[in-house]
Image (cartoon, rainbow, N blue to C red; front, side, top):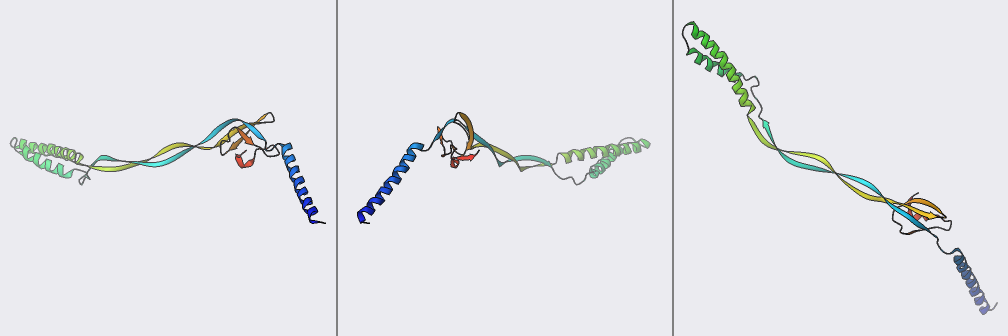
Length: 180
């Protein structure tokens, strides 16, 4: 076989193959598309926690050393007894001394109670609680498209625009789809 004939045969085969591929592509018409009817964004709510703290002024009572107020009662009884002893004479003096001691003990007890309740100090405390910031993010898109007179829906990760590309079987190309 001569060299020209061999080159001619190879070029002819390439031309026939290319022509066949072009004719097939022209008959099929390239990639088909489905018209998008509606696109709805699918949103996801996100709750992000954060600490919110503030300083609060608090008044507290100092610790009590004498819960029963014995010192106040004793001092009051002694003072009341001395004052009662100054009143009257004879047997009345003894009654006045006892009454003064009882009254003085009660008054001393109540005075110490009042002093203890008002024995306070002020301090600052830090109080914290958890607050939530709420935001939304787009998780995908529900895309309704029309194909062969039927409306179908598919979830996608991006808004496809006005049309969806189909494969040669008439299905949405899966690289665009999140889930069906």
